[in-house]
Length: 361
Image (cartoon, rainbow, N blue to C red; front, side, top):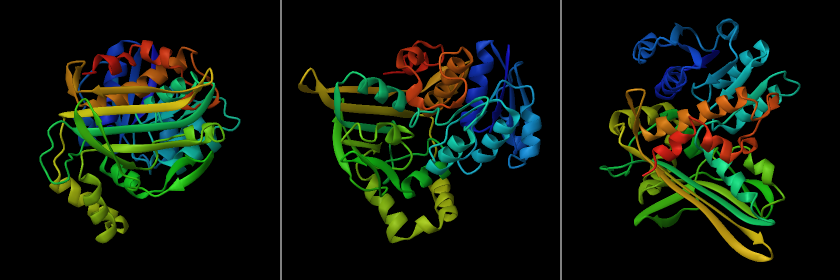
């Protein structure tokens, strides 16, 4: 049985711990600095918990001793400490971060590492990176690669047309930080909340606009190989205009703590969400200009007797599937591992990867 550490006992960390424990092949040691959060985790004989300061890297290294791997499910600004502790302990490291700076630090740590450091193992970046790379392999020459993903309420009922479904800090970060894109073959930075577009899928109209972090390492991987590549978050129409008013006109981009407090006390969270994935690749195949697309909607489901939102299912299943493939030797076990290094067929065939198809509507 593999011993694995999970750091961060929030909605995603606790879901990862439960998925791994329920498989029967993992013993999970779950750590968080908030004891009430750990007490809320579903009881399971294969899960043990510990309360600790997650910025205390010496304590973290002790927590990781004897583990085969650690999965970081802490906010983006805290995951660097977990990566450094994993590198020092010589064990495999996986995270869910969308933050570009954190991923760059993980890449630096991976140089000459004896274990694998695998960032961005969630949904976006994560699963969408795996799908996009797989679609791209089917072309002789690429023109464009466009990724659109949204974690949305099934039943929006406020002016923002939105409910909180995941980390508020992460949401604000992706609405503020510059966004990587490939423009005319070169990686460049474009502003968040810009380049709005509308499209319809299954009879529903959505808007999409630039947000930070979704491309993951794809921008660097495909620079010079594709003319245009970008990532945009999907929302219901009207959301982008109101967020721009809050962040720019009211200058709440420079008062993140206040904005987080407003959102968390005014916008209710929901478990009734839906994940919308829409990826389109255009290019040339046998001298013909063609397009391939991947579209999917994923809904909440029950896992190990616990109801989980769609964002919990997709993010947690992504990390668990990549961990499984890593320990099975299906992906590189040393150095910096990109999501595009993960074969799509292996991911979807994995017991955790199957949650993606099982939850599809």
